[in-house]
Length: 177
Image (cartoon, rainbow, N blue to C red; front, side, top):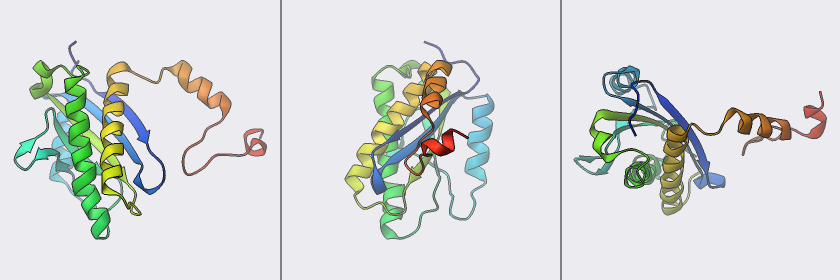
């Protein structure tokens, strides 16, 4: 499998409650638009949102190089530890899992970049569950990107049943309008 220089995009939501993980992943080749966005995001942090390179361990960045972009400003000791600790570790492991599973060819890992927008709930209360959910969400987001899922048919079938997410599900009377 070879990745084109354009972007592949995937999403995954795993878990429930305060320790759930929601990850959006964009994958692209160095020299393309993803590299431009990757470098620009790294070079232009904003208050509360400081993109950083995801590492497996200090001085060992995951491959493909992955930019962690937090969707929620880190606030409070536990939320900060979850953002920079358990969620980052889960993202790193999920990317490595995707390479190990062949979703991303190891032979191309040095030529690719990933931007991961990661939700860590400020009410997070279990770092291990945060890690496990993020690991799974990262792997599934990459898988969705690589496999181009869901299909348009999947989206239309889900829309026919009615939209829903962990924060809102419209009632039948709203859907009927």
